[in-house]
Structures are given as structure tokens and as C-alpha cells.
Length: 335
Image 1: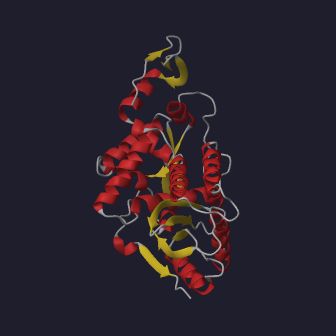
Image 2: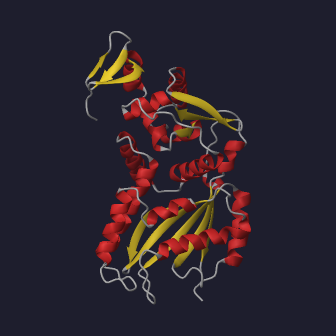
Image 3: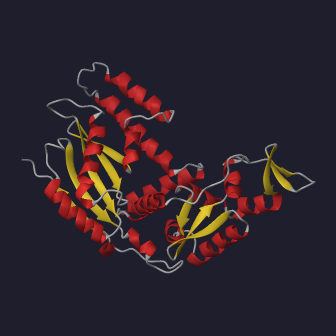
């Protein structure tokens, strides 16, 4: 991390960083820089708010629960964080002061409380990222990647964009064929440009469906995409298939050869609790038909019981173990 040139205005003691005056007391700035910087960057990465449970889980290998709790409350006392509630459970939201600190500018620092849908989406994806079953090497690699992005002052959405960018690059290397399009390389280059400029590339359309591509793998010359769908209950169980059809249409824009697809995809649906998971399992097993999902390889339904945040007491840490992670694997049978 680059070393900053820190001074202060003698009239009001506001900090000056690299000749830029910020609306933060110099002593508070230095204290946060030396002791609490990583907490703020963690919370920024996870879309500006985070529950204590998630923060504790992310940092538990390096810091004790008591240390984390004390430090977070100090940041609240310094007005860098604001404590709010999900039902009876607390979460921590970056303040304007924290935004000024992280972005090194006084303008545009106010952060609104998340809407209910945004909150559920964020809890679902954070549960998935932190609690998904992985072997030790995979867990260590994930942790290293997250820490690297956090230290670089990135946000989760930027990590998703980076994953989508890799998909386009892999597709370029595979020399895929599009219907009626002879120069797929230029098509993909244009999608990369749109992604970098945040102008609505094909894969970014998935975000409007609470979905994103986590990773990809080439198997026997076929690109397999791993798609995560966050089920915030915006769709009734009976109409959830319509969401999957919308996702299928977006994926179809990518490539499609009419007879021999070179891109297929798997879908992992993250449900909010076991009840919703069971409902989706029962509904989708009756409604998934190959004529709608020609390029769908298989789908899974997961739950990490994200609804627990609306049931447990303030700051209580609930340990997640394998018995609570319900995974239903529903492989499509080729007709």
C-alpha cells in the first residue's frame, strides 16, 4: 500500500492527505489508519454493510471475537460506522465519514440504508462466499483473493465484473462460432469494452436477475459456466421457472450455434431457508423442461439458512456446520 503524506490544517485540525484536505480530524484519521483500516475496507467490499457474524467469520483466523467486537464499536463511537438492525440482529453500515476516508474525497460520501431486497441479496451472497463447502486449498485461495481485493479498496461487484471479463477472454481463445456472425472476436471485444465502461454488456444483464457467473471450466472443448442465482423471494415458487427462462435467454445471446452448443451452464440457486429450498425443489422438478433449457447442464438448490438473521438475538454468533448446509443436486436427465 502506498505511503501517504499526512499533515493537518492548524485552524481546524482537519487532516490533509497528499495535499487534499478531508473533513476528518487528523488524530481520528491516524487512529483509524493504524488500527481499523481493514475493517472499513472489508465492509466496503461487501456492499457497504456487514453483519457481525459475517465479519467475525471472515477475520476469525486472525482476530478474536472480542477484539473484533471492541474495534467495531470503537469505529461506531468515532462515527465511521453506524449500527443498525435486521429484526433483532445488528449489522454495521459505512457512514459518510468512512466513505470520505476510503475514497479520499469529501464529495458524494452519504450512504443510504439498504432496501429490504438489497439486504437479503447481500446476506445471501455473503453467506455463499463465506460458508460454501471447500477443501482447505480452495478455502485458502478464496480467502487470499478476497483479502487482495479488500486491500485494493475494491467492491464485490468489481470482483464479479472481473469474473465476467475472464469469461469473455476464455470465449475468445476457444474460437467459438455464433449464428450468422463470422467475426466473434470483435463481438467479444465489444462486450469487454461495454463491461469496462459499465455500459451494459451481455453478462451484466444477469445482475438484474440477481445472478452472476462465478467461474467457468472448459471440458472437451465445451465451455461450462457456473451461474449463481440469489433467491430473494422476488418470484413466487410457481413462477420461479420464468426467472430461469430469462437467464437462459441472456446466456443464449452469448454464442449460440444452432445444433452443437459450445457453451453450457450450471445453475446454483441460493435459497433463503430450508422451507423455500424445499418449495423450489418440488416446483422446479415438475417445471424444468429441456425445450426451455437446451443449454442447461444441471442445477442445484442450496440454503445456508440466511433467514436466521431475522430470528437470532443481537450479535449472537451462530456457527454454521455441514448439517445446516442443505444441498440438493438435481441433475437433468437427457431425454
